[in-house]
Amino acid sequence: YFDEYEQEEIYLGIEEGLDVSWFAKEDFNNLQMFQIRVGLKRELDVSLYAKPEFDSSQMSQISYGLEDGLNVSTYATPEFNWLQMQEIRYGLEKGLNVEIYAMENFNHRQMSEIRNGLENNINVSIYSNPEFTWEQMRRIRFELVRSK
Image 1: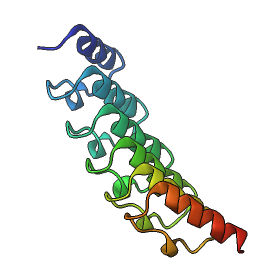
Image 2 (image 1 turned 90 degrees about the vertical axis):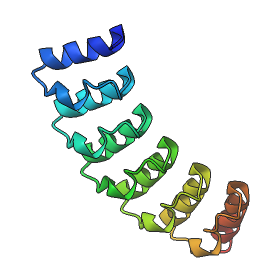
Image 3 (image 1 turned 135 degrees about the vertical axis):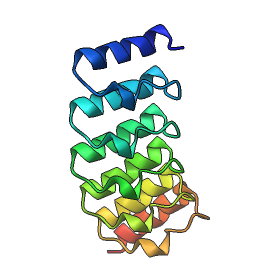
């Protein structure tokens, strides 16, 4: 049984000539269906995110990365929430070594502090420890910038 919003996504997909079998499943809500439908329309490899374990926000981060030609395998995992995915994607867009912070035990704010350090050529190994709060990381980062 599909609700009216899910039916609308399926209808639009059929109208657009898309393979709706990717998303016409009871495992998906209308927002997930929308992300998959838009990905199909943009000719993205939706197989990387057309999975019930991803919510629509996670799906959008993966699709943004695919559109930009990024290797999304670094963050296309349900263990990362969409904010963590976004931080990893930002790093990939800038050509940074995201492996330093692409770990579940960093929240998105900690990831942001590490990413900012990498962007500014700071030795982030000094503060890339999940035991530091993001505020502590920020203070350390500012001190490192000041001492450059």
